[in-house]
Figure: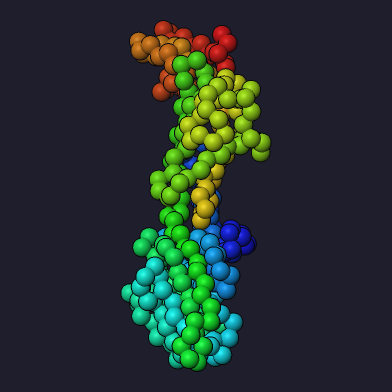
Length: 271
């Protein structure tokens, strides 16, 4: 699977998790399409994205054997230089590798300090500059697994939060049964906030998606309507809203209701 962003092609990897949480099925998909990034340095002014800890492949030139002299700088520091097929790596703490056969410079284990301007300059046999090109690399941390919490509120609405535990500039979006959340389903919040409140009587497959420029994850739960429980169990009064599949607080532990037990379910806010 390939994604094109600016002048870079992203190659993705994905991880799937299925988690059971209090009877609710939670499906997690984590995709980091910035694990390995290809950038075309042959285009002057190219913009490139890299994933923190990942790898970037910089296509410097087509045929290195025909270039008398060349050098590459990161900001103001020389990192790579050579003459024809004789190349020398001089920077980035041994995280550089050069493939002469296709003119590709590889930077591994990307860190934030690798962000910045890269300059490639080629010279003729007399040492005169023939061509000078620049590339801007931005390294971002991918979004990580998101915390997904849902709870019933005092009037039967459902509060849902989705929060990425890491990553630069996360962006959120929501769907319910495959469509973007509608105003008729939202009590507060919108499709771009990480905390929303659903109206009463809303149920279905709720998906929270989190993305940034180098990665994407989503989490999914099957959400049910809230019911109101009002009862007395062993002399203890219970009055609360909860998800319909969890409305067992008014059931005696032995399975035999005591004489003073009274169960009243209010479904979706209506007695």
